[in-house]
Length: 116
Image (cartoon, rainbow, N blue to C red; front, top):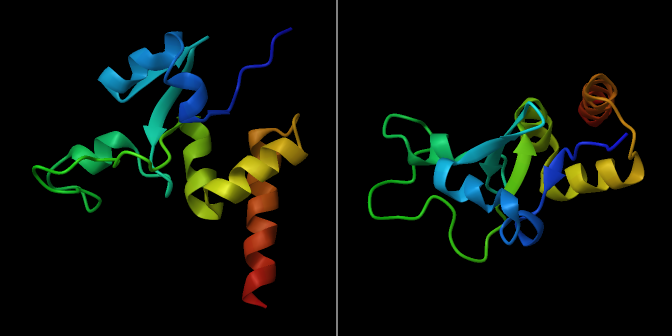
């Protein structure tokens, strides 16, 4: 059984069949919804929508060239946003079979330890 990726960095998705995501802000792969997010986990829709607290403004690019633009499964975006891009990628590399539930638990434990 082929494992469905949780995240694809721009270097991977931008020059593949998934590059269609750049025109729509995301895509659906094997019934999983993906969104393009910036390095802080904010998706293109929030960055481009007037009225959103993340709106970048008119005449500006939502994600500047050279900044990370990852394609992330929709349900994993809150974890990406909470722990940051580098820690998120490390979490998935260190735990290739981690489930969303396990990641949420681990993320909450990490946050609880920081507060003490």
